[in-house]
Structures are given as structure tokens and as C-alpha cells.
Image 1: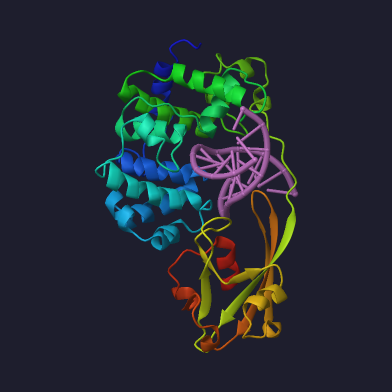
Image 2: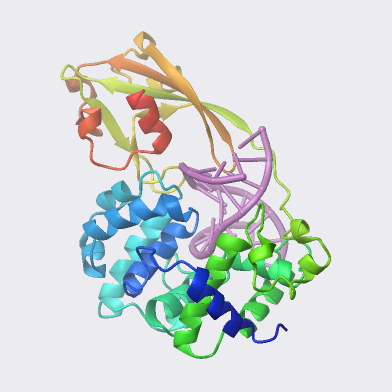
Amino acid sequence: MIENFSERLAIWQNQYGRHELPWQRQGAYATWVSEIMLQQTQVQVVIPYFQKFMKAFPTISDLANASLDSVLAHWAGLGYYSRARNLHKAAKTIVSDHHCEIPKDLGLLIQLPGIGRSTAGAILSLGFGLRGVIQDGNVRRVLSRLFCIHGDLSKATAQKILWELADQLTPNSGPAARIHTQAMMDLGSLVCRRSKPSCRRCPFADDCQANQRGEVSLFPRPKRVKQRPDETWVVLQLENERDETLFLQRPLEGIWGGLYAPHIGSSLSKIGEQLKTVDVLEAEYQGELTHAFSHLKVHLEHYKLKVHSQDIAGIGVWQPIGRFQKGVPAPINTLLNG
DNA sequence: AAGGCGGGGTG
DNA sequence: CACCCAGCCTT
């Protein structure tokens, strides 16, 4: 174990860490929202989303009482929309089962949807100033280098070692744990970066086993990547006599779950089968773009079809593109506004 | 073009 | 437990 680790880390954090992030010292609700947003997304991207979100839903009750549509609208562009659905669902549970107060208990926290062990640790320490241990990508990277942890860090054996180390390094007092948690994230983000780590500025350069061996770049071991299949999706934008576009809500499960988009299908004729009353072969080609998901690469082909709205009665929402308030996937927005 | 990011769900 | 799922940004 490294001598006086948390004390030295706290001194470093005080001088070089981040102290002005908009969710710092704003209470456990702000910590929670920010942690969920940060799960898949970088700090600089999250900041404007976080600020708009907190303005729209200032308290847990506001969030619980809001419609899923409005929550998703504030999430549109962040990706992984199940995060927003789980956040909304958990807010309702906190209101109904926990008197509108986020539980201060690890076991209760991880029962809430979207909150796992690491997010719960962040809420305890950063949000409440209680002892909590985190294990995010930054911490994983720092620990894998400090202690030369080989292999795929997502595997159970590495996870066990990482959690034990993270727990041992975390101070026992709540206030110290709060500083420690922020400091570990800052060290990983600012110094022990994935590429171009700045070991020269690291307070643990002499303690770091990977650095001693000149093998910092070998940790953490990159995960093997699978080839992503290619797909083509046709996006059929229906536009009525008032130049309004028809938006449909996507199924909650799956890609872009709960967001709104025009008809999407594998081909114009497949979409046409759903739209028996209109002849989609008159659709006019608008353009295309390629969008990469984590697991597949999609070629989006954009077509537009002028229709009479009475022919498409009963489904979706007609709105001018610029006035549509609900959540639209980022690449669909690009297509519609292109 | 490839890599990274945390948690949920299923078998 | 192992594996699959999911969207965007940075490098």
C-alpha cells in the first residue's frame, strides 16, 4: 500500500483539483443527476445539459412530477436514454417511499434504478459527505497503473481487486472521503489521463508501479473490440399541407427509447406497408448520413413525402421542426435540419 | 475509425 | 457468473 495516500492526494486536490464544477457542493440531488449524466459522457458535454436540467427540475419532486417526455427532451443528445428513464423512475420512488429524501444508505441507494455501487458511493461521499467508495473509469485507470493490474478490468477477478484497493485507499471519515472521491476523479481526468498521461505532475509518480517499470501506456489493457455490423435505415419524413412534420414516439425499449422521430424502417416499401393510405414511392430523397452506435453502424437515408394530414389520422404529433419540444435523437435532428 | 464511459437485464 | 445492450464525444 502507498504511504499516506489519501493525505497526499488531498493536498494535491486542494491545489490542482477541480473546485468549480456546477454540481459540486449543491447537495445530493445535484450529485445524483450529475453522476448519471457523467456515466457515459464527458464533463464538458454534461455541463450545459446539467444546468438546463436543474433549471427545469430543481427538486426531486419536480422531477418525479414531470412527464417522461419532458425529462427525455432534456436528455436528447446525451445518449443512453434508459439513464433518463431510470432517473425519472427513481425520483418517483424517492418521493413515494423515502419522503422525498435520497437515502443515505448504500443498500437502499443501489436498489434505485440506474444507481449501482459506484454511483451510490459518489452520492454518499460527494452528495452527503459520508463515507462512500467509487469505481469509475478514472479510478479504474489510476489504480490499474499504480498497482499494475493486468487483464480486462471489467472481469470479475479484476473488479474484486479494484474494489478492495479503492476501499482501502478511501479514508474512513465522511468529510475526508468526499475530498478523496473528487480527488481520485480529478487525478484520473487531469493527470493520469488515458492518453498522454502527465506523470511528471503526478504526486504518486514514485509510488506508481507502472511508472517505475516504464509501462504506464500498457495500463489499463484495452478491451478487445467487436466488429460493428452495418445497417441501412430509411427515415421517412411526412410533411403535411401546413409544412408540419409527423413525429412518432419510439418504443421505450431499444435504440432511442422514448424519443420522437419520423417513421424509420429498413426500406421505403417496408414503411409503406404501415402507411397503407399513402404512396411512399413518391418520397423525395433528401440526403444521408452515417451514425455510429456502440454496437452497430447505421446508414441513415432521409426521404420526405408531402401528405394530407387527414390521411394519417390518429398517430403521432404534427409539429414544425423548429417548434417541436420533445426529445429527438441527435442524428435525426441533423437530418431534419440539414 | 476506434476507444471510452456505468449500469441493467438475461441466461 | 458471463454476456449483451446502448449514443454520443474525443482522439
